[in-house]
Amino acid sequence: MSEHDIPQLENVVLTVEGRIATIMLNRPKKKNAMSPELHRDMGQVFDYLDGRDDIQVLVLTGAGDAFCTGMDLEKFLMDGLDDPAQFRLNTDLAFGWFRRLKAFTGITIASINGWCVAGGMLVASICDLAISAEEARYGLSEINFATIPGAGLTWVTAEALNRREALFYLTTGRIFDGVKAASMGLVNYAVPLEQLAAETAEIAGEIANKHPIALRSIKETYYGTRDKSFEEAVDYEAAKLFELGFFS
Image 1: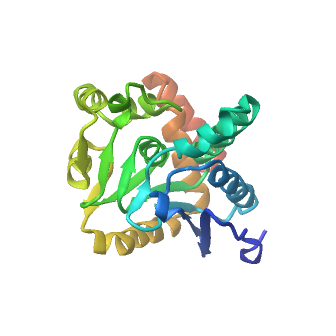
Image 2: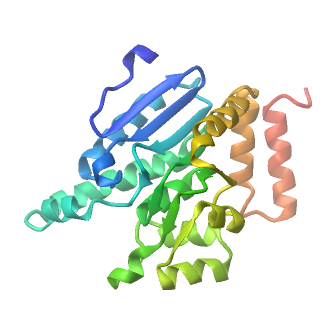
């Protein structure tokens, strides 16, 4: 596939410049809440990206003053109340692209420009890296609606935050800003909103210029050794180095 084949979609804007692809969630009037239609669009985006082995960096951001505010519950409930099969299909569509984002072979960067709550935090946390606007607002608000996070959000929160921070925000539902998100390690760092686009572009460009095979191998090795013992990790790295021809 080439840049001429980029899908033109209503709820998502995909752009490609060199080795960098950018996905912008495009439902600003709904704070980029994820509707079934958006999930279908994201499926098409990843269908396209699967055919582009040259993409080394994938940036995710949002239109307007939000990154993503989770699921559009109104749309999901409208589709699901009378048709459980359709509700299951919508859920599968969402989980489908979440998994594809997590499995993407290039480096993924969340560029968090505004509201990032509930499922929006899931999307941001799945990404390998995250850069936030200081003014961005985060929250695990499910407790305020007498429910719990879904779609793996509890798991990624536990991965991204220490136990006390995770449980504090899971049980209070409080909102916090990008500065706090950076101090907790939820994001790499935070910058003023007016600097976010340029900062993201700089980091994406720096990473995109690295050796493509080495870059993918570093990501594979990082995630591939996390659940291994030290000895197993040494063997895994050695095998990867041989695969790269380092010892040839």
